[in-house]
Length: 488
Image 1 (cartoon, one colour):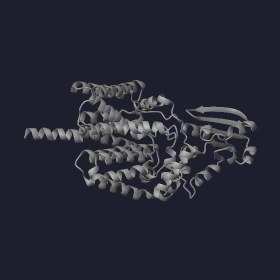
Image 2 (cartoon, helix red, strand yellow):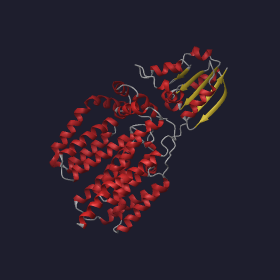
Image 3 (cartoon, helix red, strand yellow):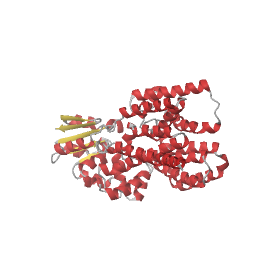
């Protein structure tokens, strides 16, 4: 009776208490500074489109690299909670916090309690994970679906086969590729693993894949179009800079250089140990280790190599690999030493390094609210305001006037632009979008350079204004914003 009670207690601790405590820790760390940074970068894009009807969300996101799932979730969320910074960021923070449960479950179920606990804590203390938990974009949803998908894929491969697991895996992967196009990377590698290691259940797995394909048909043409555009036109990113780019990415995943070096040393030690010792372990025992290692290192290196042709090697696009990085590190720490004490010590050192280097308030380096309020303060009746780039339109409106930001019309930005034009404010991509008669008639022009040359090279806004007016004042804001006041 005593042994049964102990077993039940241990089961409750490992299956309920530990993941719950990890979730609370993860949630708390992400909650602390949820509104410390301005709504900025791509967040206003998602928030603005989420206010539209479902049909318009799908229609307007088609020509972009944004599948509609996150904006659809956000659509229903903002209907209830509104569009304040706290409200819109709470949803991605929740997605990001829930992910730790499945990171732990993968580690604890397929390796050991120690591995699950270590990987979960590394994720909790990840600055990179916290950054995107404070970002009202699809990335935490994508990561959550990725780790759930991996959990069920491992169950299909490693445990007693269940049709229910295949159904759940299929639904999760369908949501996954509707949340981000890189979900196809996850789907491809998981299919490869299941076809190789779960052949006797192949017909059920292929049936799941068929169902995913069927329900994704409406989006397939869009995917092919976006892929064709990226291969022919390139992306906004540059090619990687050799091995330096690999190290920099590990640095981002590891909070600080000292932690990155410690993780790289652990990886190197594990590789050397495996090469020297070559233990005779059964294929059955090797499988989980290999799958976790391959789940991180294969896409990580493949995306690095692909980026020399189509640049995609960026921390936001590799964000979905974060759970597999922490799981790989935890597995390596567990396997490196024979003694259980050394395993605990190694894992404790890793967690301590992440814990002392975590930044719970990672800066976005965008003073969107401050620059908008500054323009409001200095703008006088009759002043012409020009903003380049046009992409800053929604961000500017969010802080300039929430009523304008909430103005939705049949055209994507028509209602919002009409409100701003009525106040003589013109967000543009180039000087050709401004009526020169407005410029000639203006006595004073306020020009906001919101990363104009980066987003719209050859826009000629500054050069045109400088040739016709004198600069009376210049004010800079972190990191890319510059406000010029021109007068005749």
